[in-house]
Image (cartoon, rainbow, N blue to C red; front, side, top):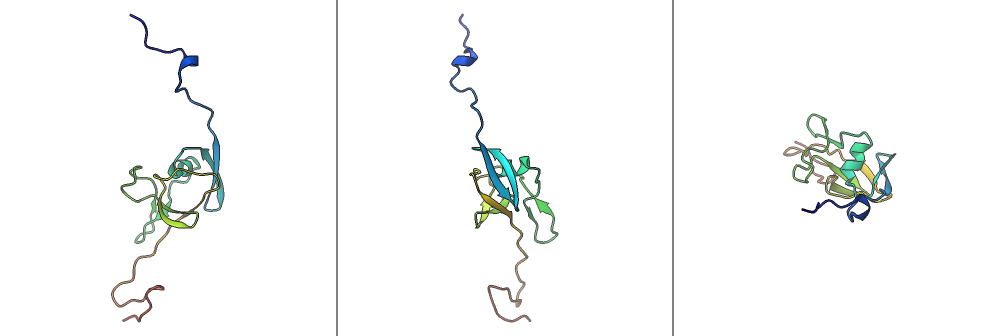
Length: 118
């Protein structure tokens, strides 16, 4: 019975040389590989926490890695609420951590609502 294995030189799906991509994460340049998610590039650069929780200020980063949990929300090129695990890194992307304060309680004014506090 003939072998089904292809010699390496004839394998059409062999890996190609990776193309580097440089993005800026919170002001620091970080290099990844073309096709990698923003989360992958950020993690490879040594950053584990992408944002902080509103209540306790605890760091959050990639949890599920498939876009369900929203723990990896970042700002990319001025666009807020981007899931880093779902977006591919592009050359020159500017990524910033996203830290949102708690919403105001009843009767409290927020900068965008106006009004008076009780």
